[in-house]
Length: 127
Image (cartoon, rainbow, N blue to C red; front, side):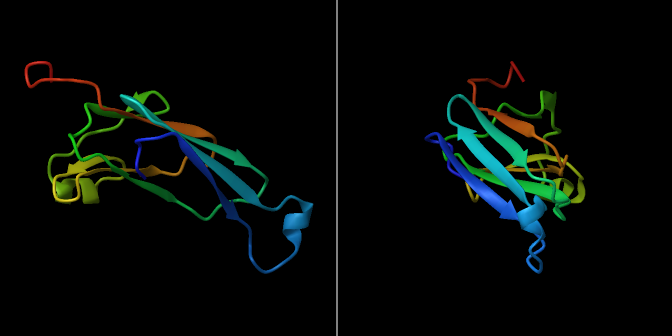
C-alpha cells in the first residue's frame, strides 16, 4: 500500500462452493488507510464466515525513511534490523532499504483491529 493519500477497499471471502453467503456465511473486511505522519490502517469485519487467513502481512511504501515505531491496537510491535530475524518472528516489522517499504506481520486477530505506523521525526539520540 502507498500511504500518501487516504484510501479504502473491501476484501470479500466466502467458501466459494455453496450459496451459504446468502445466509450470512461471508466475511467482508473493510481496509481503510488514513495517511499522515501517523498512518493508520483500520480493518473492520462484517459477516459470520470464519476466515482461513492465519497471518497478516502488510507492505507499506515509504521512500523517505524508516518508521519510528509500529503498533497493533496500541501495542508496539518489535522492530527487526535483520531481515532473517524478521522472517523467523511471528510478528514485528522491518524496513527494507532495497524496497523502500515497511514490512509488517502479525497473527490475524480475526476481529476488528488497527495498525499504526509512525513516521514522526526522530533522531538517534531519541531512539
